[in-house]
Length: 225
Image (cartoon, rainbow, N blue to C red; front, side, top):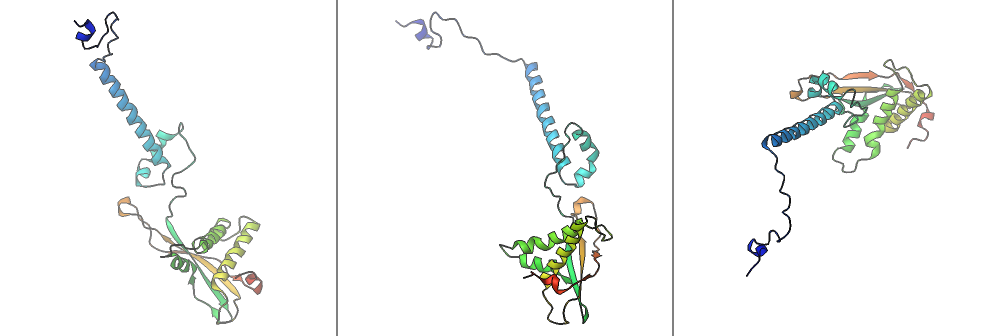
């Protein structure tokens, strides 16, 4: 003869009090909790999307909703950093140079185009081809105003000498026309056209910034390979 526990499948030993029944939520409670969870997740996603757009580089979406994004972010979530810094270049800047010899003024030579030709299809381009000329121009541009007047004292003078020597190193000594007596540098700024869906338009005209003629002597060639 079997006991009570065996007849019931062993679910509840004889003589022990029944265990607590599982808690059951009412339908209104389930709806309230589900709605609160959805609202919390949605609010979090909206906040994260707003922070992302406010920190991202300027674009059609951020320009259209800039006021709302600022209202969402400031002042509680203010920050001083940007995603994808620095911002993507909106202009292609080429550095060009020409020299003056006893035979007259030479034509403009695009040094940036030479660097790009050396980099293209090269799996291991040199640091010199990628950055030296660009950094030399950036150094000069950051230490001079729009009228090419120095703004950083000795650093401005150093930037001029550095840019001139970089240009002379790239050109080498000319085989014809005699020694170089002066050198002139200019930048050619070509706007990058935005995509069609951006609804913006950049002038396709190249803007040139010509620097004054700099005298050149044998001293400027010292140390140049």
